Length: 344
Ligand SMILES: [Zn+2]
Ligand SMILES: [Zn+2]
Image 1 (cartoon, helix red, strand yellow):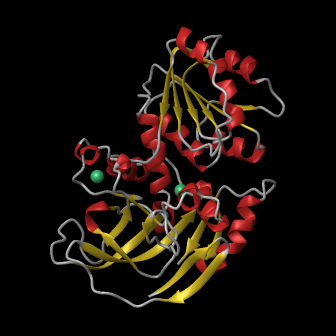
Image 2 (cartoon, helix red, strand yellow):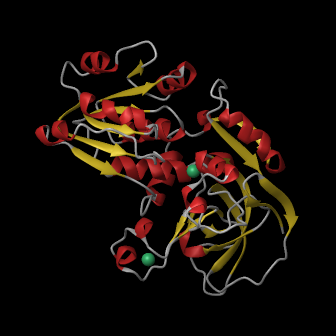
């Protein structure tokens, strides 16, 4: 098989690797589309926490947002067969520990994370994958299906704060996760949704995808606009998808008493400020969210039924070998890039 393997920071090698025998519970896959996200960029730069802390080992074949076709299956595999179109969960867990048995396998202490934590990903023409972490799809393209993983992350983070038709929702950060979470909140029936950001093209995209209003914090006052959009009540739910620690100061200012806040991404910083007294006085819930356990079939359905649209997020396409060019593009904050799709 051929793969793009990362041997260390900025040390990318396109390599021929030996094929191996398929395990009894594994499927052999041909990746058809792979998305890249901030985590891949951090791995490329060597700044990703798992690698700096020694938890993850080099070399690694990245690629955790992917879709594939099944080529062959091991003798015990029953849930997929050759020819099926599949997506795979990023977290591959042990299935035996307490967190796994409770269904929270995103917290499994023995977990691997595809393309990140000691399990090779989809920057390759073939992939060996534990079949029980695969999910089938039919009614979307391979390119769209590569966005099932970030959508599942958005579904989990939205579900944790239990969005209902009673809620007004603010989404902070119109990046891929924010744009997907906004659509998930809409699918769950939220009565009014605001997208908060700084890049005009992305705010426009949020409106096209169903945001009821946008707040550009470069030119508008966040609290004043939040009040205007909610008849002075402020938001029942705030979905934080910027990962910017400076934004945390604003959270309590736009959340109403009894409101819920979901933090959907890592900050890679200890510098975030939260007004704890406002949290206490407002009886506000602050919810951390990472991973996507148990929501994959729901996520496939949300996209296949058109309730979440992924295609408009794909703004750029590259061949897998040109991934370094794609990394330059996603670091350029003046570019109009939202999501890059790679062809293995
Ligand atoms: Zn990702
Ligand atoms: Zn486990």
